[in-house]
Image 1 (cartoon, rainbow, N blue to C red):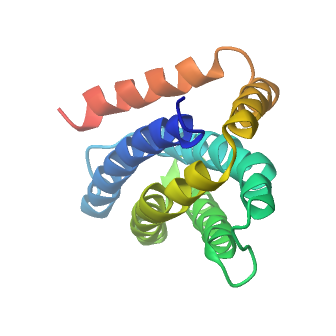
Image 2: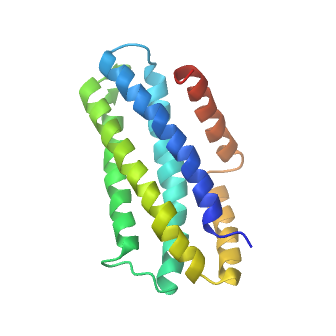
Length: 181
């Protein structure tokens, strides 16, 4: 049986790759050359919709409640820490977004928010992959994990829509070609 965290870990891989691109874009923004404002907007959308709305949505609405039922504490526990970090991340996404007005970018505001977001999410993902997810995989019964996977699939279709996952991965691949090669 595959553990419920498998799909979330795959999503983490895509998010980590996006963070590498964002980190490079922040450097380009600071240098004031070599970036397209529409790509900055696209990266903000990637993190807002894929990382937060879809990925964090699955965690907050489906996985974390199941973990609580399985005995993993929310208040003063690892779930509470993750939820707090999700909120901090949302504020940083808003910071990046508000730094872009039309085709103008407040370079320092964008780059600073991007740097903080990259640092936050890399640490956050490490904690989930190495601490929280293994706890959930051990404590949530296999039968419940199968149900959770079905709930994840339904959530993704309802929140992201058909084919959106593939579209997101295609966008990240395009950004890789454009900025990391």
